[in-house]
Length: 540
Image (cartoon, rainbow, N blue to C red; front, side):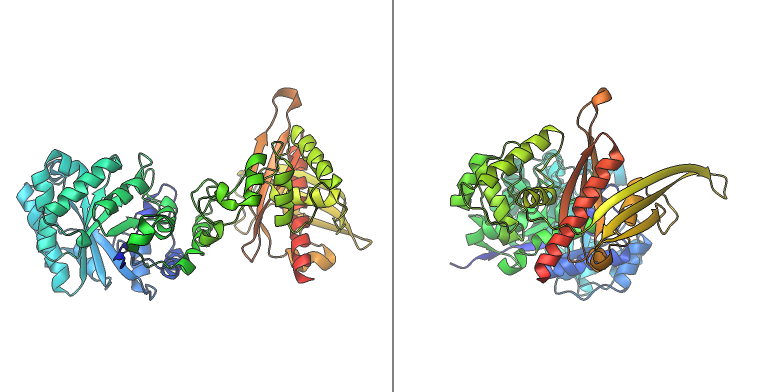
């Protein structure tokens, strides 16, 4: 049976950039475009040329992609022709194959925001689309606030999109701009639009996630006949975000009835790079990836309960709806005080540690985990620290180096500009191959900003480890989380550190102490020891 084609339109670089706290550089836009092209989306919306220097610079040297590079703008303004509108001209001058213009379809917005008659708004839409197509470019019309407009005045909303379609627009995109429409209404209205004369293979859907229904609303539109899907990587977007392509893509490829009925530009082979692409975007944004994200989150295939892990060992499909490898992710069996020996053996196997069923060492490791978690440790997320604990219990942990002492000082003083600043300095003495090595580092970064005592400690510890130095040169701390596990005078501090290396390998370690610096240093030590263990094993 032949499958129908669905087209994926990514707006991460434009709508995704409207996320609070997100601002891409021109080079970051290029990197994301290349990743999207490798993934296999059909359209990449690069931004709004003329709206800001970054977007203009991006289009001046846009990367060559198999995906259709698209410039975004708005329909022509009243009182001038499409040919003489300088805002529209900047979009046209980006010289992209496709141009997407947003226009009003809600009568309230036309009259209250634009302050023009409804028929004039329709004329502006038609003339703008005709201007694009007369230049031999593919035209897309984003019907802003369409679902709200259809609910309030269906005749005007339909007249607006029909004007765009009759003027040559390749795609009419129904936008749930406020994100408040629910899936049933999206599906019903989409079907009514098709019945009113806009063919489904010319119809797109653009949803926002203000009710946590963006993906469901998108699928409802597809079920009703829409054939273009707009969304963003990791669900970036204004307010609560847009439809999340990192969820929609695997649904379309792996889940029925979509996998059998539709074809998309992303192949099963390319799908294996989805998790890497998702995390690359978070890395660019300097954000911690959302662990519970569907398909690509680090906890998406984590099985904590002992009963679950036991079943997973027999057949992964008992608690997994897909093979995690299909999306480039991996199964995790976290260790915690809820864990049984099934969890433990599975996690040990994943770490390359072989322990037979019934081995007394399993009980010893479990006892240590439960005892330490009672003291405030958490091995649920700190998988690297768990592995080090297990290897130590089994006598398989090499003594790479020994920390003899360390010291951290924090100073508050005025700088040359008479401003109060903080400066931390750390001294670490380690013994490697029988030799003591003293390293000193301060917390200032290359911009002259103080990064704190933990940063100074990390730099000093990783400054000179003799024969192991080359192995750890490419590792860096990417996240630092602190939690107080008890209150009052008995307070205990738990520190979780996420580290990463040049190969993209990421791992988490934990430290616990009444002193936040001691807890941090313990987690830092584990991070380095795990890196040495893994890389030396790989090289041997």
